[in-house]
Length: 344
Image (spheres, rainbow, N blue to C red):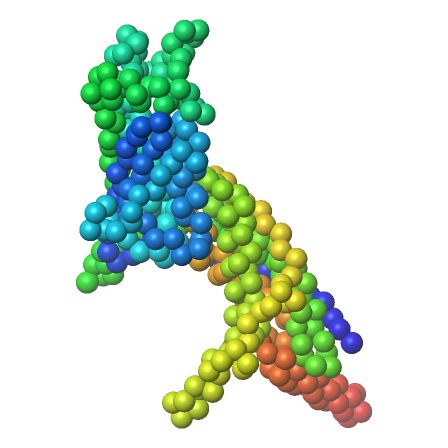
């Protein structure tokens, strides 16, 4: 026999490094052919930051993502962007890229305004084109505009961008500080099915709603949420690190169990896209926050299904079955007690 239950859990998370000032810097150059060179010490570890930065730079510079060239990330030659972690990549480096590109565009518009004899505010750039508002003749490609500025005017558009999270360190006396500038919030609902005979738990679905700020790439955000939920599922039900007398007894994947494609439930994501008012770009992050509510939601769903409260992870079939049997025995003893009270 199987029973179903649903559980909900919420979480919040501070973005970027804490206890020390977090910052990221970039160089931006409007290059020949209307391409844009971004130089920063970013490290891609599979989360798609390079794609996101290209999209941000393209949007800010009025070109297309394939016009963006991300330079060598050796910090001996490019500005420091710090490590990949702490849900900081898009938040820190993305904002730095936006700041640098906006400075570059300000210089570009000023130079083109002098060339055309107009106000810089009237100049717009989008989709590889630059033009003067309400002018049918003052319009050209970014490639042509760059050529004019370089070859005819001797102007090379170069800019830099720096973004800091404005942390303050912990006070050693009272512990006060502003460890993070921005926070993200999220909630998840999990639906599970529990086998009363074996204690096995199957997660049928997870509904996740997360505050992610301004979204750069919706598919990447949803992909990170899905990946975080799968990690959280493993944390909740399978992954158990064991030791005996100081020796690891789960040294490989034969005993340290990870979720497979057969364990992944239906995942439904809702993105709350309220821009962060404390940052130039309005972005936040989702890398680590999306894993926070998953395990609690699953554990609450187990309780809703069978009335067993698991207090240590993972909730293995053995633990769940032991809880079910203990609850049955408790209910049986309670019934016997009630019958005896009736008799007496």
